[in-house]
Image (tube, rainbow, N blue to C red; front, side):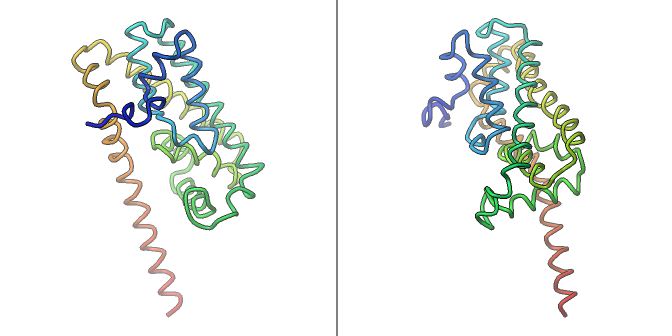
Length: 222
């Protein structure tokens, strides 16, 4: 397997944590904030970073109690989500209206808002577990002017379930040495599989919705 570290060393979670020394948790929190709060955040290794952070906390590379680590990361994810919402609310239209298609476009906002409409507040929580989507979902929620308090509530739940939860799972895996070693070695493949499983039902509902919309348009024009 070709590891991320061999291509872009500074994006390797293990590299980031080991080389950050006593500032490791602060660096992890900053990356999690950026991934969920800034438009450039989708380049960061969020899920992988959380798992490895938990594992390395178990191995005392990070000398802080796991519960404080999980809470700090969850809070950073929450602040990132709030920042993304603020950007979308204040500057989103000017950013996204520049182009109609692509990742940073009004088409992306419309698709995300359709996801919000279909799944309600749960969409904010589910988006946390999907790379790239978790970067743009808060911004799209702001552009779509989702109710501020409602968004903040679901954002908090998603931030701590995702950020704190995956970190704690990584810590617990540290108790099983063979599994921990396997995860560290093949974490990219494992998380890719998780993403695929997560995206399949979302893609199914999206495609079905597009087909239904095309049929309705065809019926109305005939």
